[in-house]
Image (cartoon, rainbow, N blue to C red; front, top):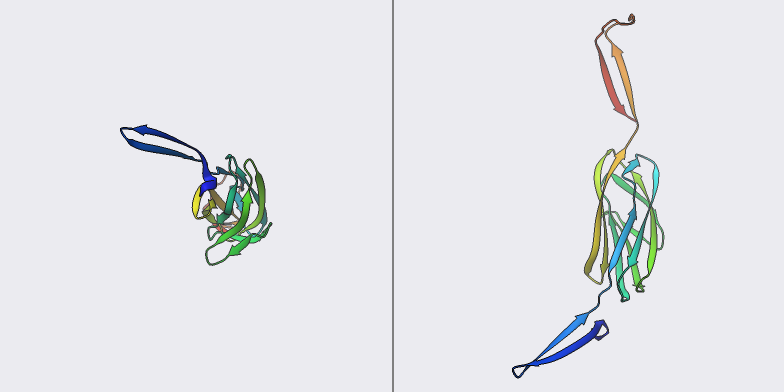
Length: 168
C-alpha cells in the first residue's frame, strides 16, 4: 500500500526510466520467559514480550503459542484464547506502534512426563515475522522402592535386590 512507501527515486538510462521503491516494514521481536522444566500437575506462569523494533506501525498482528501434548493450558491474559484441537494459545492485536512493546502472560501445567517443544510465532497480517522454539521438559515425582532378597543385612555385606521406580 502507499503508506508503506518511504521514498522513491527515479533515474533515466538509455531512454528507459527506472524507479526504485524502498519499503519499511515493522520488525517484530519476541522475548520469552518460559521455563525449561514444568512440574507435572503444577501451574507454571509464563510470559512473552512482543516488541516492534521497526520504524513503522504494525497492523493486524497475531501472536500464537503452540503447545506439545505434554503441556496443558490453564489461562491467558489480554483475551488470549486456547484451541484444544490445534493446541494453540492465540492473541489478536489490532496494532503496535513503532518502538512499542507489550507483555502477554499465560499459565501452563505439566500434563504428562516427557520432552516437548513450545513454538511462539508473531504474524503481521498473514506473514510470519518472527518465531522462536523453546525445548521443554515436564518433570514429575517418583517413588523408589528397594526390595532385598532377604530381610536382615549386615553392614558391608553384599545382597541382591530389585529397585522399582514408579511415577506418582
